[in-house]
Length: 275
Image 1 (spheres, rainbow, N blue to C red):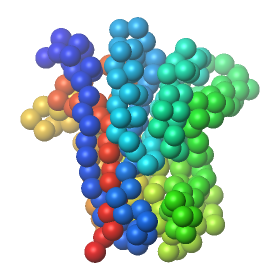
Image 2: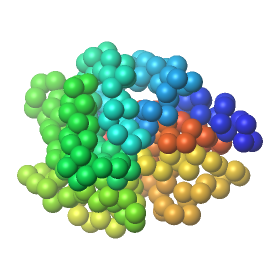
Image 3: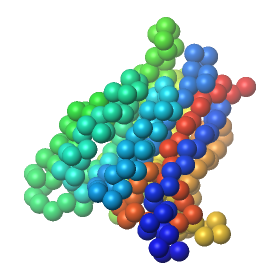
Image 4: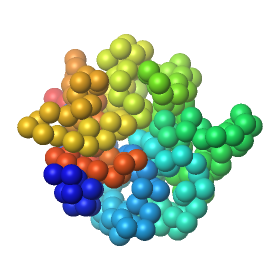
């Protein structure tokens, strides 16, 4: 099991297709395809698994999405890990020619770095600049409107800073993220950590769908038992409460490249009008 988990397990990839009915979804967006991926931890692909990273990026392009969402944790520790992959990661936006929205995860801040506060702040700026340079639209406690082809309808794509429950950094600001969003707007919210979906996101926003990562699906599942399920009430897959949804992806990478019973995933979410 250990040999499999360190060799074959991390190299597998599953494309998961999910249809989600959204109340108040404009007709123009019925059938909209969102490709969600998360927790790349790019440096963990270094050398022995770089072919898997290429495969993952090519898969995202081949899925023909309307929107691409990345739910955080691009790096392991610092942005210098990413520089050699700039051309490869740029292909996601260039090859699809659709908007790529992203948020920051706990590893995208400076909590795992050494150095002065000034050096840590500089590294955080470098990561934000890096994501912009590869054509991604980083949503850091902010939102953007995504318009239909005729510009008559729109949905809101919102991205909140990491919610930081427990030992993780809290950079979230729901009030700032949702400032200017109308009550009847259809909102897709990205939040790296799913921990506060029920306690904070549902009562303090009108997000119809929340997209998260962070848990890696537990990375291990034996007879349906995952370590993250003992900590996170919503640790993997699709959840619904009062007609509002959360999807937690298992991610494509991990800080420690070990997977047993939990396959890396890229998710295709198709929005449907709720009847």
